[in-house]
Image 1 (cartoon, one colour):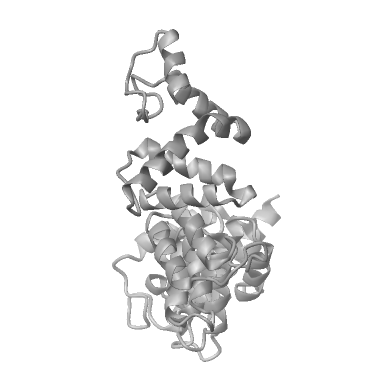
Image 2: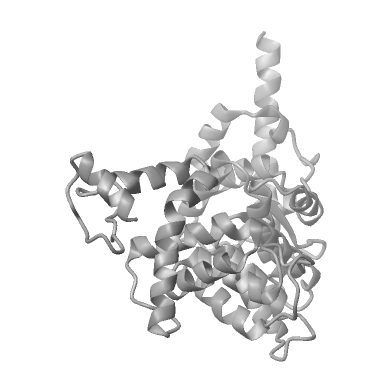
Length: 374
């Protein structure tokens, strides 16, 4: 460190600290020393040997200060904590005691990466929750939970995921399946793809316990699929298969947008339902009886008309595109103050069906007249 400080003096840099342990300022701030810029450049380029050659002397001096103080931790600034954490990461492949000491000191300083590595080390596990054969000795799950919880509270999804694995281990004295699932959901909330897949499959397997578990399953599986999970995509194909267009009228095949606009002037609610049916492949009964207020679940359309139609079955239709989301938003706004039930302004199923058949009959006559005129 003294030599690096003297070099910065020769280069005309300002003196920002005494020659003992220099407290570097934040990267890019006024007063950065050239040796810190070199450390940052070496780390960003992945040149760990070069980084260690310059940073390890500084880290060793901090470790000596800690040993002389006889305390588990000493006062460190943010740059010293970052330096120790990076030294620990660079030394991790060697698995030596010095890297572990750097990791401990950085974890006490609040570095979340060091806290994660420290927790994984005590648990003798990797970031995927698997046992590491390369780490000898018995696992200390209580210490692992302490450090992993701190890392998770700072936003590391991997920490919550590993915690979910620890809480299910029979050898852990504080084994708790409920807590394990809570940790898994926190990891999924932070974007952890395996956790999202597991949350989705868990909700689907337990759909009999809660009527809305199929909706939760679709939500998590869509998140996992967006991150490239083939398993999530296969599960979604079973949970929410694409519906058939149906044979209850020629409307779905005609794409008669101009005629839809005409219908929207006289029967706006029916026109909105028909457009929704065309986009999401609803059956005739589903299109006419769907309760739009309860159907929109954000990520999917919950289609359930069993209360008003004896042969209706609950199913999901996924909202996969921005156009589908925009259409559904428009329809929901149209029905915002409308009672979608059989006591509402649309009437019962027979009345709605009669109105639809009249429209389709008019549409057929118009098509026939256009054909004859041509």
